[in-house]
Image 1 (tube, helix red, strand yellow):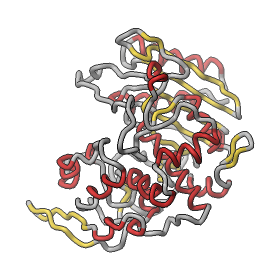
Image 2 (image 1 turned 60 degrees about the vertical axis):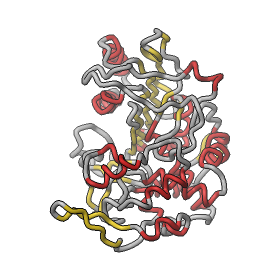
Image 3 (image 1 turned 120 degrees about the vertical axis):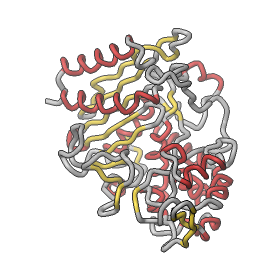
Image 4 (image 1 turned 90 degrees about the vertical axis):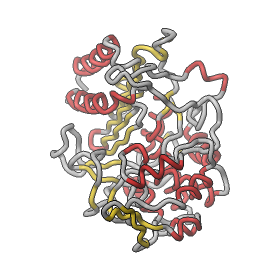
Amino acid sequence: MNTAALQRLSATFEAAITARRLPGAVLYISHRGEARCFQALGWQDAVTGQPMREDSIFRIYSMTKPIVSLAALMLVEEGRLMLSDPVARYLPEFGTLKVAVQQGDTLQLEPTVRGMTVQDLLRHTSGLTYEFLGDDPVQRLYREADVASRARSNRDMCRLLATLPLARQPGAAWLYSRSTDVLGAVLEVVSGRTLGELLGQRIFEPLGLRDTGFHVPPEKQQRIAQAFATDPDSGATVNLIDVREPPAGESGGGGLVSTAADYARFLQLMLNGGQLEGVRLVSRQTLAWMTADHLGSIGIEGDLLAPGHGFGLGVAVRTAPGLAPTPGSVGMYHWSGIGGTTFFVDPQEDLFVILLTQAPGQRIYYRNLLRSMVYAALE
């Protein structure tokens, strides 16, 4: 990698911090098995003036999804779960779902053409939605029911979801949603453990992820990275989840906290085809299956997947060298968190990159900037 280009990348983020566009950030770039950049920039807490640390702890939100998806595939390898399984086999409340169809001013409920499957949960074709992505009737129902509450167990959240209609027919469209939250509840049924216990036993402990979990214990809370109190662009109050106490609902879709070093070990395992330092969690073929496109001709709704991208089992996958407004190789996979975190893995370049910051309103701009500037550093 070009050293001057990497220095330019760091300087660009330092300038954003100086301009108070970002409170602080941790950058991690690994190329050909070597950490080429591991920097803590700016402030962990801009209010108190506490500097960012390399081991600062971030709310990673939807970067939880790939970890939970990998856990699901580990159970598939053991014959305890199949992607073709109906979700209702594990969560019977999902056996009588209806689909909301807007007809004029009224909302009609229609039966599902087929049941939701585990594969639908992994690739976001379940027919579920996210309440914060729009204002259609089903999204309003989610908000009115307070589906997002972390005071409800995963299973109770599923029982509530099952009383609400689906936004689309299962399998009909890629629609980003609470699918991975439901997957977390499925994994709890299959394993007989809470999601946190399952991830701890099967992924965190074997990989040595010491600072990853669904809350931050008291002895580590001085390392929690904070956002600005108000968004520097809109002036709106910034509200991030409180991670100081264990939540009743361990959200498989967005509940984890982690550090750059921890998440780097997870991504190195992914890049290595399922093993790290003699520890193998899944087979090489399972990892290839996870990071392949699972959408094919299924339509994509919304703008979260750029042109030239599909979706695998828990990650977006690049399917074309062009089309997207950011560079990348075919086969590159990635995902991000609404709090400002992002990662991408490029197997062709033997590369993975992590950006951790707590800046929800600026997340899209800086993750796109990051990708462009990292690829500019490749020689």
